Image (tube, rainbow, N blue to C red):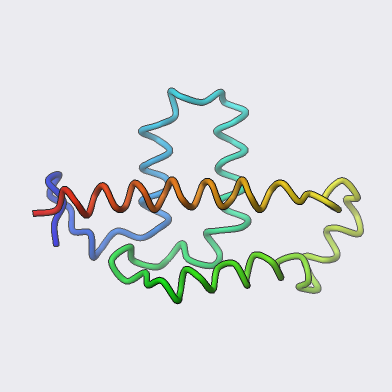
Amino acid sequence: MKHKGGFSLTEVTVDKFFHDWLDRKKHHFTEKRLEWKRSVYERYVSEFMGNKVLGNLTKPFCDGYWDYRLNYWKDPKRKKRIEVNEKRIGAKGTASRVEGACKSIHRGADILSARAV
């Protein structure tokens, strides 16, 4: 499946799609907001699905993201970050903001798929 732009949707990874999307949308955000989006994506999304090809994402795989995300800070090396950075404790709003970012990525992927020839 190919996008009108000529690239294959079966070859675009989530990481590439995200960074290309962010580059196209950067004029909508302040530099501080861009950096926040990049860092949240790198921390919470890229590790789980960044190297996956968009065309291979399935609902069960994406549903598994929420288990990963809910248990993110339970991992021993990540838990240690909480211990040294108390302001991370109770950052409950981050999960909902990450969900919003994921929905934006999915909407963009849906748009690309709809434009595929």
